[in-house]
Length: 618
Image 1 (cartoon, rainbow, N blue to C red):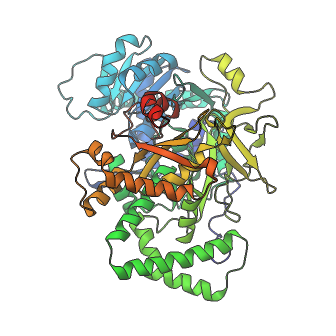
Image 2: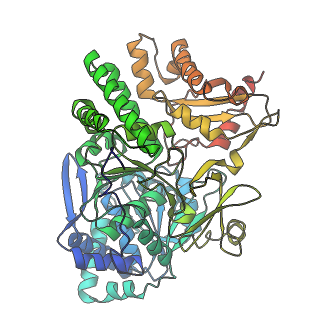
Image 3: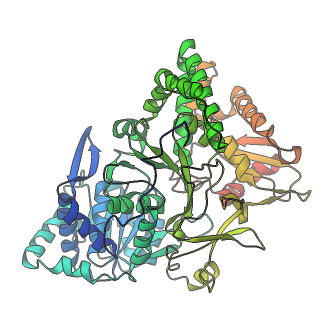
């Protein structure tokens, strides 16, 4: 990329990094090739601990042997109910190595959801992280007809537990050691018996429009996908990745665990979701994949820190980011960058921009990857101005993750890039819906043949539900979800995601849902960024007693109105938002309004706050 960064170490590889036609085959080949090298690292109680490939293999072998000794058979399903921890990966690879099907459950799911997922998937063994997750499992196990055993990873607070159907992970590993000693070929034989066409994993959709659906991915589809990722993302055994997104989500499962298994990159696990900002500065990943919510949060933290800094620091940052933006604009336009501007950028890095990158923890990153939801083009440009290419990828659970990707030598903010080399992507000529075809497309929804037939055409094209356009270079851009397009009472078609993304670029707004279908004008429901709005209120001496009173404060209302005015200036009058209200509840992933990936559920929010929405139209 002319003048802004060196692309020599950002170009993806195309050769096979690790042989194997199933996940177990690939894993055991990787162990043989990389045995003493470190693969996994996790911080616990302030200390980092490492596991080599050989140590990981010991854990996987013991857990798999323990499962087999307890009657786990080829094709049986085991589920994992835990946060993103090392033991999640062990359990996942052990289930697959025992010839089973591995299913993840979000740790934020309620007991009723755990019950539904275990029953729908036919779960025989359930791995739970700790006493909190065990309580959920015990509450519903009587309604889980196939469930045989519950395995607890962390037994803290459970020392006195006496239940014949509950055992610790350590106890399971001990059973496995004994079993493997007597049957040394059992686990290798189970792993070798796995066929590429066998079901490997279930990934349940987040259920924004009804009950979650279990997307079935075969070994051959997963292996095909990670080999394809190798043509899309530059990653190898020298890289450090941060593992922090939910492993039951396709992004971290494929792009994190399995792609690192394939390439040999180290996986660093954060302590918990709250320590991500601290842990990323410690890990300083060289390849960093995150969802837009994370990139927005990093930007917000820099903006808040900047406001607290002195006048000189603010001036230097302003000058430096201006230089970076000028270069980014030239690079994006394909124009040469003059030597004097390159020199200014080097000075800007020394004086300001490198410090910003260190504040976030991306100072070692060669590039950044964003996906799973649309991101504001302005945010992409900001990271480019820091000197870091941000590459947007697009895909979904049903495509085994990424299906398109922006190449580093031609970034177009707002675009999801051209089709990846390993699949076909096209627009439906009648509806503009994005369609995908390839070996990475899933095998269908578990127990839902009619839903599968609706989703995949007879000739293999997947209906994605995303509406888009494509330019002369073959770059796709998503305009919205088919079901989310707004047609106002005046007949104007509006794609709300563009407005919502611009609003979320504000450091004071975490999420937004635009309303207006069959209505005379647009309105919006906004979820504020608690930390940043509280800081604003404290600095401005705005009195508030709790989160709800903060959202009602006239000064906060005026702050959000100013952000809304900023966004409205970019749009035609008919597309502008006339009114808003702020959610008065501080939402977490446990709340029904949010998906496990922390996105507002549009239909549920519209229904739940129907009275307040109607009030905006009176």
